[in-house]
Image (tube, rainbow, N blue to C red; front, side, top):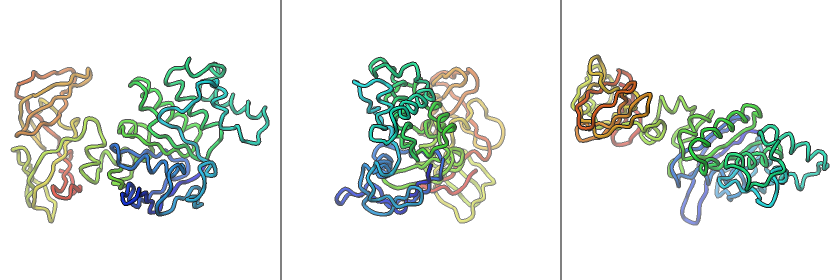
Length: 355
């Protein structure tokens, strides 16, 4: 196992810079997930760590050694790709053992590793089958097994679950997380799916336009986003953003005034963030933010209902408790408890406090 450190890492394609001098320390044994929209630089960063992309500037350290000029095979890391990249003419066992082809292990030692890896991944009964006879989830486990069998110091995953259906994605998320807990090997994982990031990571790295915006645990990023982009990207459904006016004594938002807000140095337009699960439909009494609007759409989910509501020309999402399903076009009242409003500067979109 090994730590991975990025020091001012840059990737440029001609005059176009895709990754802008990012710094990050991934501790030995950590499960770190890079998350962000397509084109944000997360896969490029992963490929630089793997050695599949040249580094334009900065340093990459694996196990405290600079590896900028090392070939991929010299870095002792293993990568699992989005499209599995397993060979259809080989059996499961042959695919898993392919990474040992050039090793100096004896034939018996190689077979032992293949069998141990197959057992760990629940593939023991499939070692003689061809990939065509496997499900998508089983093929993904074969790809992971081929990476595992070499006993690398770190695993790199590049959106490995994007080709699976929703049920299989959920199952494989838990399998990969459980595998990490058993092996304790450093994992760097790339996805555009924030649910994957939230459920799997020890630490999340939010990227946008080749920059790192925020690094922290899933709870830290959910509870204390440092900017509007991170606030909206982390959490599902996405955080509501409403225009507001902050003065020295109160906050005005969607026609409601909330007194007792004290943020020295701020008397300006703000963006007010409210998570849908904090915006409760049908509760109009009490302190905090209270407003009324018309129901535009509903999404019944069984245990709760997501309600799309028009407030002062802006559509927000609130949550109705239990199996309450308000009628479209009806008027409803929503309330958010004190302390559940996130305030962001309207110009810089940086966090300035809570209300």
